[in-house]
Length: 285
Image (tube, rainbow, N blue to C red; front, side, top):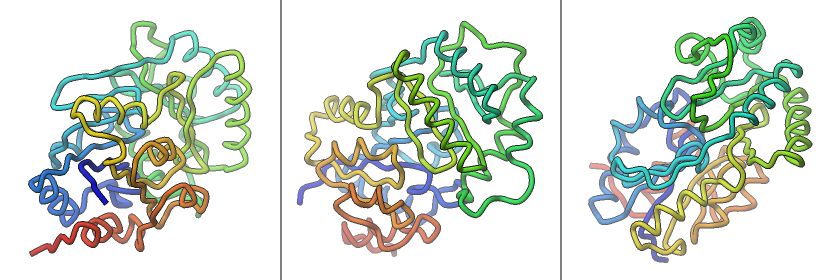
């Protein structure tokens, strides 16, 4: 087995339930890079959502917002955006459906309309449903407290990277996903979920795999030499693309069925570290 590059998802994979990097994992990845392996991050998060993470880990390239932005060593290699007309239309439908939503511009803060603040506060009130992952619940609470800017209207000058939708009720989110599928028939776009409680919307034809192809081309590496590790449905395109794919133990059975390997431990148990340690014979001294 030849592996020259590793692509890692963030939430549910590289990060722990508190959305933090484990020191052992950082040391292991630093060691692998010194041995010549390239390290890529492939995430649904935007650059702004990774601002507190990447300074603690040296990487060779990033695929952000499920392929909407790809960059390497400070240089943007590829960038897409969601048309303003589509952002307005989908926001209107989300408000009708009482769905929590976030609009994520390329550089500015994520935002939502001030008229919907009460509705969105309801979505993160009360006890956390057992089916919602700890990291997702914490992220929504933190977003509402500190990260979402409240606007009177949608800014036509923003370059929108993605829209994020959440509901603590699985059935409501299921219905919203069906609504999005119907909208895609007349207005093509990509949509990926990382849990039963969320869905993200990007430009059509974009995925983590399309971004990774750009990174590999820039490094002259074949996808057969790529190891991809993730835990969610938005990781499936890169599982299919990579020559080697591993699903986290916390992934659903459906996601695991699309990977060649499964880690023995979950992200809450630092499963990525132990998987890489065994696979690459790394011993943390």
